[in-house]
Length: 439
Ligand code: PMP
Image 1 (spheres, protein in one colour):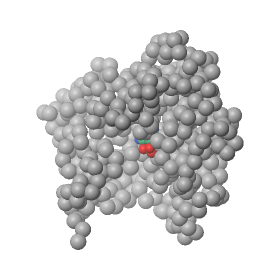
Image 2 (tube, helix red, strand yellow):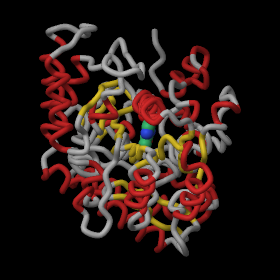
Image 3 (cartoon, protein in one colour):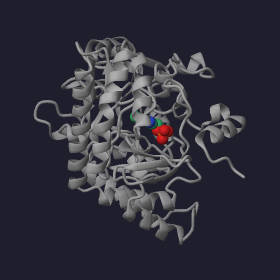
């Protein structure tokens, strides 16, 4: 018989898979303890193998915008499954989803579906190099764009959580063509373009960083990147894998005014999407300027392909999710995110814990010991009192609230986070704040 507790499941998993997991942060490496093995997710709740239910503030790291197992998404998936699981050929739902994306994010003139955010950014980088015939890519320390070799230098997410400088197995030749700059630092970007301008193919950035904890772009920073890339014939790649369709129907680009912003207009040349776009089934995409996108095979010389790209089940889940993501959904997620972040801050203050709440739209995170300046870049994020998070996390977990198992990750709310879910979070926070103070 299969084991039926998280402890026993973890033992079995470790004998079969490296670290017992298929994605590193799930291993609870920085917070300690046994990772919970989840067996059910409905609405705002997840349930582990031991039968304990948690209010979920991870939401599968973003996709579950509507809440888990939303009835319309599940129904759409059931309908699609009845017609077959994968065709390896074109299918109408791909254009249905592309159309919905284009309507919401007008910077997308053409879209290519892939299966993961990593593939989307990997392809965007290759495409930028192919289009510009240049080699260098500028990225920002603490930004995570998936586990693309050239983008793992000073990456956030699990690379930050595990305090890795990058990754073994990535050659120096690969990283030599990546310039890593401090986030929010206009002068560093200007200097890079002064020195290397004619060799820079693209600047890639998260629309708002959320993998070193959340960092708010300084006013005008994205507009500055948009301008300087265009002045030098480089492309501006905006990674909206995390923020896209979550912070706003049109992503962080639209949330912050996009091309129409009176003071700081900005337009990406390429955007990457993942998470919400697949509604919980593996799907991701890159899109943007038609002249650039048409450099992709089969029209152009930049090769990219995928056996399961545009998978009909994933397309159905994505179409149902984006269709159900009404203005009310965003209003609800915004309000609940604000409520949780304000309650968190109030309880930490009451317990005397120095902290800042980092925000980008409805995404937020907490950073300990950063009250004075907040977190503006990776150096600030790494300088925080990260040691307070483990005790805080486990106190919340014991009280039935499932947080990201790393202080460097954003917290995610959903349309299903109702009053009952909020009550449990409010009830759990005071004790967690007290143990954070004592850590
Ligand atoms: N870009 C960003 C901004 C991300 O947050 C992530 C994943 N958290 C990725 C890319 C990679 O996506 P995936 O895990 O689907 O490969």
